[in-house]
Length: 119
Image (cartoon, rainbow, N blue to C red; front, side, top):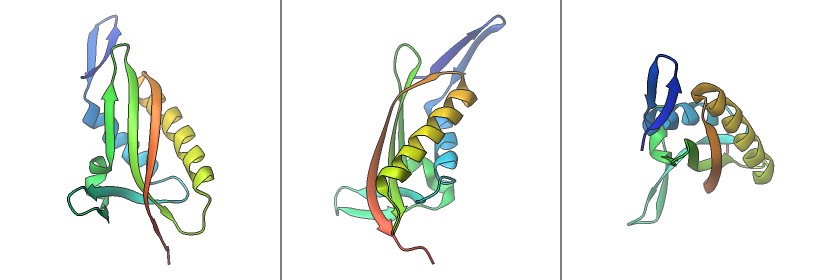
């Protein structure tokens, strides 16, 4: 479903891929996030995605009242607090996506798929 914003001049429709791309670019800038993860369900393998494929680690759904739900599959840096990184990611993405779209975030789910050592 597309997000819809009504203005005095008409309607603005926002695709969920647009929100996923923006949320992914915001997420990789957060401290402790190494990148998005692609999970191969068949093999159970987790792969770190390059910046061009950020949307593959993010799932966005838009509910009836323009409420956005976002699922992140992330890889975090070794040695950082997962709780702190998650709280930072949620707050940053919530603020920036709501400012960007004009729509409200309903829920953000974070799935930590792996840990990487950063050189």
